[in-house]
Length: 157
Image 1 (cartoon, rainbow, N blue to C red):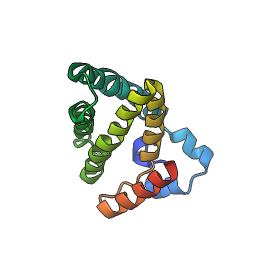
Image 2 (tube, one colour; image 1 turned 135 degrees about the vertical axis):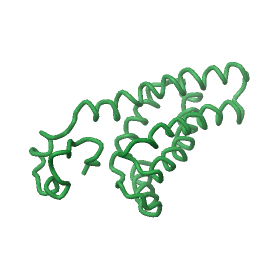
Image 3 (tube, rainbow, N blue to C red; image 1 turned 90 degrees about the vertical axis):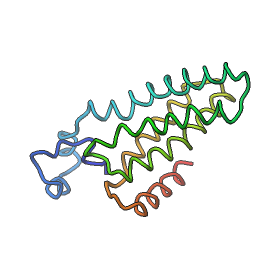
């Protein structure tokens, strides 16, 4: 089930009431602009900015693939997720996990870009990553998030 706080307008209904809804009833409540923004638009923009622009500029200036050119743009990418802390939709633990995984997964996308010379493949991977992260529980329990994330990563890879 998708994370209700991210995609479904629950302001007039309790989560318990929604749990009993059919798929068709939930589909009527889904905030499709939020789904498109988080799963489609955000990965396109982030890949263009962090891999297409920032990583490429740093790589061009360093003139070789090294720790600085690979990790600096991805540390910035991970820290960029700090913008989610003021949101009531994300726990601090969830945002910290976004930062950590942003650096790790972003580094993979950068290396993938160097070897495949294709930004669009990274975007597709990013689409799947954002979709899978939308399935994470809203718990602020670090162990619950890590266990769930590990299962998703194993299924995805």
